[in-house]
Amino acid sequence: MTELEKYFAKYEPTAEINDRLWGDFTQKTDSIEFLKSHRDWVEKNSWGFGDRAFHYMWYLLLRDDVLKRDTPRLLEIGVYKGQVISLWSLVAHRLGCPVQICGVSPFQGNKPWFAKNRILNRLACLIAKHYRDNVRSASLYECDDYLEAVHRIFKQFVLSEENVTLLRGYSQDEHILRQLSSRHFDVIYIDGGHRYEEVLEDLNCYSRLASTGGYLVLDDASCNQPGSKFWKGHGSVSRAAEEWGATGFRNILNVGHNRIYKRSF
Image 1 (tube, one colour):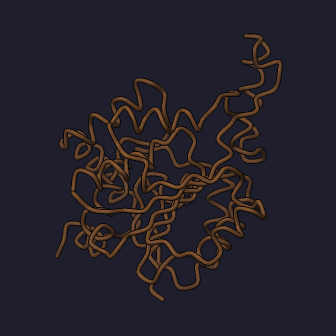
Image 2: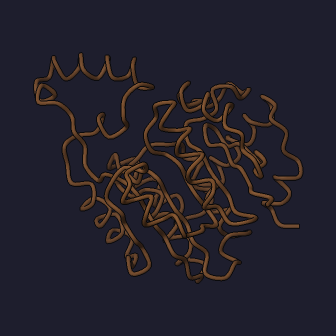
Image 3: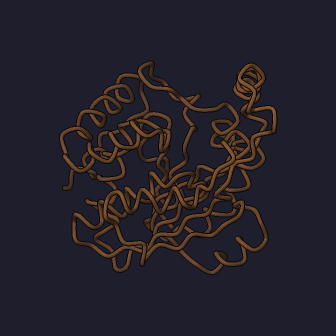
């Protein structure tokens, strides 16, 4: 039995287990040099969000299952600056396994003009934080070229982008759905728009693309999960997770505000 299978077998969504799991994965990230180095760089350069524990979560999923498959395919909805897709690529490279990665993102922010004023920007941030559940994620980001940021983190860790496909747009854009509708993925990570309707639509649309035995990981979705040591995400995303039918999926593990579902059929 692999380490991943042991976690699956023992997991129960209790406060004690959720807190211990989050703490253990945080420590284990720092126990593997290349995971620690990657996360240290991300934190130092403000290159992404999420918890340190997630690095070990992804490492475990890829090492013990996904990368053992024939031509594994991974999809991220909401790439931002490339923290997660570069981590996937780094793990695959270190383990000597081929992988196909696809990322969907607008690759740009659209903060309003008044964000340049320090006082008005501070006020805008407070308002945005309060109403985060009702705005598109990209609207909170600085006006910047995030596609170039993705290229930079790949170069930083000497990673090839040969097997990486980046699609510019929002997850529900017609041209994005059309390009992905006939494909299947072993991992689908949903971290796009955070409004309830957007999340539910992403879950309904993209869960269909998960291969049998594949994983769907939903970010910011643990407001209804017990535990006190980790940030739990957003109410809108958590509500969508609870109301999503999840037909054919089982919530097999939760790490902080990331919820992991596995497709059984």
